[in-house]
Image 1 (cartoon, rainbow, N blue to C red):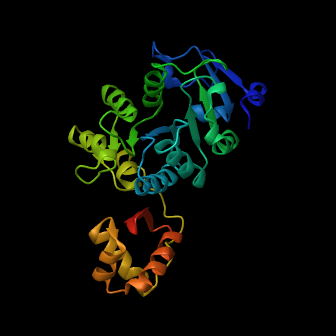
Image 2: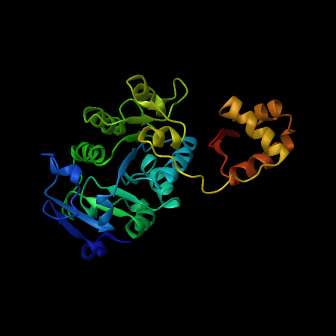
Image 3: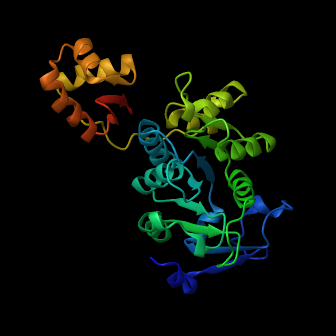
Amino acid sequence: MHTESLKNKICEITREHFLYPSEFLSCSYAPQTLYCIGKAELLKTRKFTVVGSRRTPVAAAKLGEKICEDLSEAFTLVTGVADGGDTAAIEGALQGSGKIICVLAGGFSQLPQGNFGLLERVAYTGLLLSPHPFDTPVRSFSYQQRNRLLSTLGEGVLVLSAGKKSGALITAQYAFEQNKPVFAIPYAPNTAAGEGCNDLIKKGGFLTENSVDILGRFGIHLIEKKSKVALSDDETKLYVALKELGESHISELSAKSGVPAYKARAVLSALEVKGRIVAVGGNRYAPVL
């Protein structure tokens, strides 16, 4: 998908159009015209915003994907187009219902090259949305404007990761000002990628470990679609050990579980394939579910 090929796919939606989102109608900062590629009808559905740093840790990204997969059954998810937290939200939504809106900070000519394949999938099952004409560049203030639109569209905001000065915190702050619930994944103390998330929780954000922590606040209860894949005895031992220890080295897991180190590596790989854990580098693993 090349940016020039997008021009004939753009649909313009003005404030007078029936698909113009009601959340924008009373906002002086909302654009007069929205530029859309994909399913513009998603603008009239219930929406929930998910953001996160470009440096979202692997374990948090995997957890975010799972949460977003579940959330997409009840909401159309709203996020940006960057690596890290945005990508986790997109991947999760595409694994779920496919209902996803990605909001750009500039015109469609500014789509990130590295994410073209993923965003092409969004254009097919969801919606690419820009508040700017095609050739509008991204300026220093563009992201703050975009973040305000993200918070306005969603009924709430989930922050997957955020350092002390992350742009995700700007979106969360706008949500607080709009009296919308803010949710954040908790991090271990002194984890740079999660300092902003922990601060949000201290300020009244809801600690979030799974989709139920969010959906329950909206009175939504999803029916479990499928049972979890069964685990072998050794997989269960290592998984339970990892849940108790948190992110751990393979040697620690072997000692805790009683599964020999020479055998643990293969068992952990099987758990990773089943989506229960994630390798975070340096022979260390973290639980996902």
